[in-house]
Image (cartoon, rainbow, N blue to C red; front, side, top):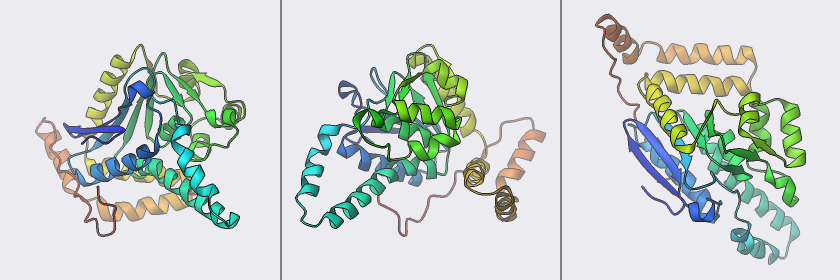
Length: 283
């Protein structure tokens, strides 16, 4: 599946999304926001996909928002007669763009992100919605919005404080400075730093393959619990865990894992069932 801004392949239970506008530094044009939602809708229906890897092409992961692409949108808003209606529409526009990264967080399988070069502005919004992040030595991260007179608005300020210390978040957000790869590793934004993009993607694919070999139901439950715990009290999260386990514990995967262990072989797990898409967006 190839969209205007993204390319999706699924192989060996790994869904691989690549930003594919290297000549334009993978800037986020208007089509990108819909492409991201559509790609994850496709992954949701592809029951063979058990883990997602997001990588990029060219020198930079992404140079962030393509401001020129939003000129027509701004012109349309300025043409409206009622300021209140303009602002209500702007709120809806932001919420739609936020959804383009929320689909990463809500994806029922883990999402790994591999970053080379610059990860600027909207790129930081994107990677913070993933489960794990990896980068090459030439990578850097920048909350660019403050440098162009705006507040980051599609996820960075909401998700980054859950990933790295608050003081570091505030410094990056207030100053717009670049965080280099080693610092990103030191504060915990990325799991590992690799010498180059090729080595990074190779190693990230190995990690993805390990995840894909596990029970997809157990992996889904694990992601669900980690995300829920982040946003709720310990007691609420423990209660949700008990309810989840009451429904999911005695699965075929549990018995297959035990049987495979006894027979000294690798377990073979069934894919998750695709959603019925009663009210979901069509890919």
